Amino acid sequence: MRYVVSLTIVLIALWLAVSGVYKPLLFVLGAGSVALVVWLSLRMEVVGVEHNPVLYSWRLPLYWAWLVGEVVKTNFHVAMLALTPSRIRPHIIDVPVPHRHAVAKVTYANSCTLTPGTVALHLTPETLTVHALDDRSADDLKTGAMAQRIAWLEGSERVDAQ
Image (tube, rainbow, N blue to C red; front, side):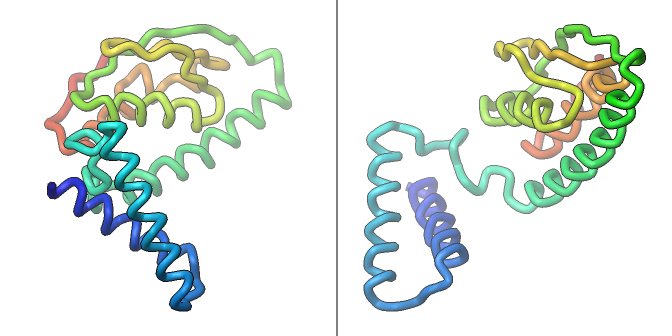
């Protein structure tokens, strides 16, 4: 029940923040939209521990800030690779996925894909297959730095580096 309540509160807050128009008719439509989404989520059985919208709580904005910094940093690296294509050495690597929750595993793969120079190709419960433009592009994955950030995000203890 607490997951339904937290989902409802997050949806209401999101709707109020995005809407920007506070008229009675829109409140009714917003309440109907929230009720429909909560009902559909319950019917699809996606409301629970792993799908709790407040699972990451205050850590999520901090993780996003770190990820944006990584995206900016690696954009410059990929731009340099584009200017000197002889340095491009594409390869595929497999890195372990040390996370407990499915949401964290998917966040790991998505974060990898969002970071320029790497693309997640295949995710299994134990490994993530990644295409990297060069060795430097995959450094955070090889050293386990990104996995460690996501372990912190999900509230896990420290994971071992590869």
